[in-house]
Image (cartoon, rainbow, N blue to C red; front, side, top):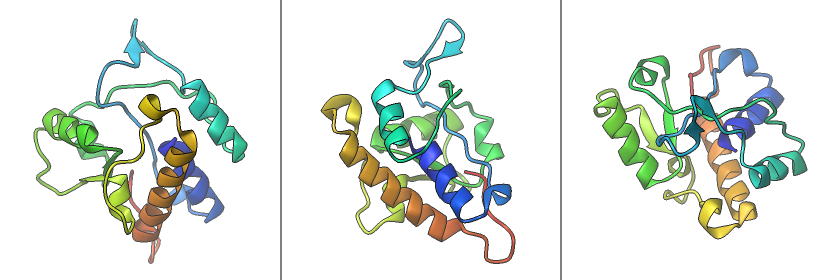
Length: 146
C-alpha cells in the first residue's frame, strides 16, 4: 500500500519526475514459482476506495544491491527493519528507517494481515507517507529514491 500511496502523493505534488518509488518484500512468502503474488485483494480494494491503482504490481524480494539503488529504505515494522539490516549487511549510510519514524508517533504500521483492519493500516500508511514526502520533497529540484 505504501508504494502506491507515496506515488499518489508525489504525483499530486507534481514531483513524480524527482522520485523513484518501489516496494519489495523482506521475506520470500509472497514470491513463489519465480513470480511474485499480486497485491493482496483487500489492500487493493482499500487503495481503490481512495482512487489509487496498483494494477500490474507483483511482489519481489529485496536484495543486497537495493541498498545502493535507493537513498531511503523504509520498513513497515520492526521485523522488516531487522530483515533489511540482515539482507543489506547493516546500514552504514543510515538509509534504513520505519515509515512511522516520519510521524509524531514512531512505531510499527498496523499489520492488516493479522488484524484485518485495513482502515488502521491506511491511516498509518497515509500519515507516514505524508511525513516522508514532507521530509524528502525537493527544495532545490533534488529528491530521493525511495
